[in-house]
Image 1: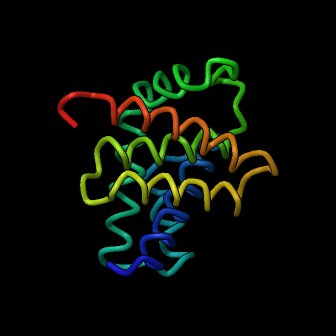
Image 2: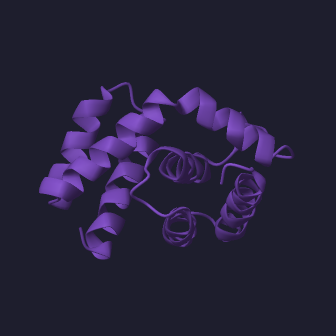
Length: 141
């Protein structure tokens, strides 16, 4: 799938995850509406579904990782957009073997530039950079 489509799929996934923070709707209905609004089909839509379902399924573990790598910022007090960008990137790094980790980090920083606050890209890069540094130290890497 071309890079531009993967980026659009990540945006759709991020939008659905963000909306889920505030809505009582079912995740599938939110995601399907988001996909319809963005016009994503086929592989791109499936990639978005995988991301959203994966983040939802691993939310507690992902939040623990975020808490470990951003100890000065309580997870429940993070800006919802930053929180979801981090969840999305960490899920991609740890579970989506088709995405190189550096690509996931770069995409997260781009999403932070597009949708986060002024300080978001630096914060996202710092948290993910620390996580990646620890991953790279592991002997089975």
